[in-house]
Image 1 (cartoon, rainbow, N blue to C red):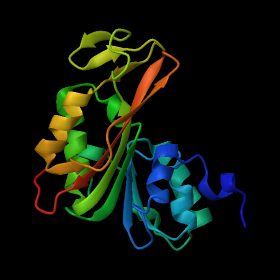
Image 2 (tube, rainbow, N blue to C red; image 1 turned 90 degrees about the horizontal axis):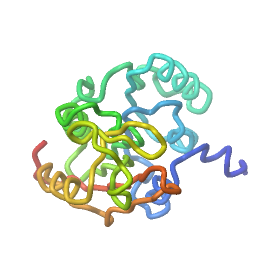
Image 3 (cartoon, one colour; image 1 turned 30 degrees about the vertical axis):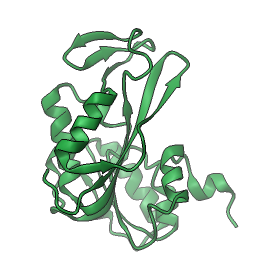
Length: 207
């Protein structure tokens, strides 16, 4: 048996929780939007899942394609595309699970943020799972400085698009989804907050 770090890689602990709870199971088609270095794909690739992804960084795409060739060589490299989330070439209702990990908070404006959310939602099948981790102001409302709109300066000196509880709950309803878990936020030593947003797409839903 492989050591756990080799089997799971640097998977996000909250995504690992979804695996443990049986919400992501073999036979599902998975799409990672903004996959970066592929940190959340190692276990899925080793386990034979049908995995897809997009990233706007050519180096990230090249790196992840090499990872795919190593861990699941039968999977087409073309599954991993150099594309923006809001303009993905995958068809509507294509996948069972969308993973959006530490991506949405890089949006510059409301328009860009909503376009990325809607792009992710469009490719998700009715009944599918949307797993998202993103920066928020929850728990640090007095420690972030508004720059413009929902762009804030954080104590760690990074700039992020920040959401809050009311915003995510309302957006979930507008999308036509249901929260599978209560919103869970981790405060990282008074530097930043990361919120986990897990949504089931209704069987009859818009985007």
